[in-house]
Length: 181
Image (cartoon, rainbow, N blue to C red; front, side, top):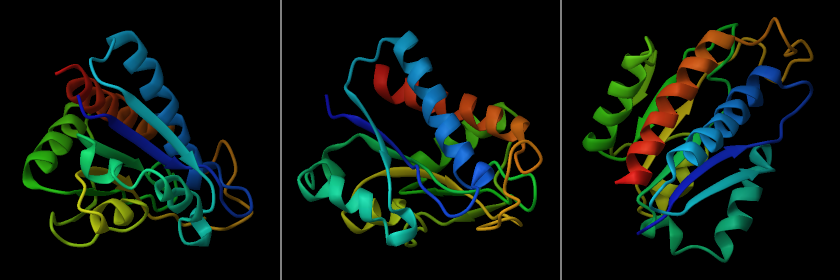
């Protein structure tokens, strides 16, 4: 079966508890959930550096794996700031209507709806852009942050733990559904 790929940037400027923390926490929770689900397909977990340098780390990963962009059943991009307690405003992005509905349904199940959406077909923000440009299918979650690139982006005040937990459940559900069927 084609693989599922879950990616998140891991580097940032200054303190970056809410900038990077949500993506890394959800990424780790998805590992746990998928291990318990015994997926039928391979799942690749990618934590890249260099987000703030034009997605340098993801570009390096894709340099020798370009075929994965279109071969993967989906790319799940866990971007910056969606777990921010100050001005988080999560934005959901998806490659097509099928994945849009799957994502919105999963988030709704846990009481979360994105504050904004990038319409399927429009070029997304963040690392999902690399997948869009290569013709791949994706889900993407990122947000705004009143403490973006600020030294006060520190645990615990900068992080909305409830939002991160709900998104972890939703995106784990998506990954389990896509990897076991």
